[in-house]
Length: 246
Ligand code: 4GM
Image 1: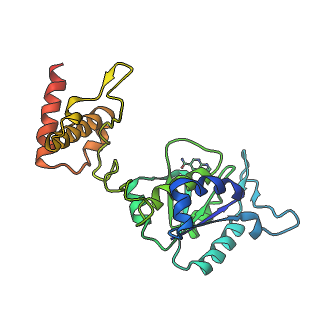
Image 2: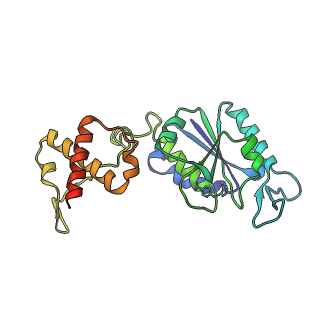
Image 3: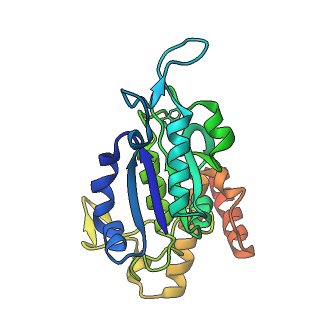
């Protein structure tokens, strides 16, 4: 899988990707990342990539032509690449999108700045528009990095066997259970007895219950869409009745 990132600040992409798990995946050739300077496709004396908005208003708008030339050039390199745009107006990006996009041959991220893009970029160049959350950033580079990380984890071989992607939060739509390591007591808080019991049946039941409890308390919105078994539903009923009593 090749990730092309079109940006006015190509250096922003460099070091975060070359560290840790993604760095290893790059070295192994499981993923490729190329950042491209949008200015390379600009024209005119000043190589302008932005211009004032028609109708007036604050900020500068990214011109469509350099972005169009960038997409044409990069599709020449990676013909089946999907073109993605990140903005606060996009579809909320989630684990399901990351999983689906991991099967693409290539992705071209168009990173915006300023007051955004000329609307014809959306209309004619972009396949999908995503938001990584309800907040505004100074540019699309960090969202592109976030999405590359979330997508790359789903490419076979990227995660070592120690970090399994199937045991992630969100694979079944629930939050993760609490984890503990040594020491057995820290700041006066003991590791739950069940985890020291060696009884894997009880441990698995406890962990599932914790997942359900945590999701119910922190993200009740996730429970509506979660992949729950009959056992899960029984456990949840029990948790709800405990909560109702207190
Ligand atoms: C406006 C239009 C993405 C602003 C296009 C980008 C937040 C997100 C920008 C743009 C961004 C997000 C740049 N801020 N929530 N800023 O995913 O690219």
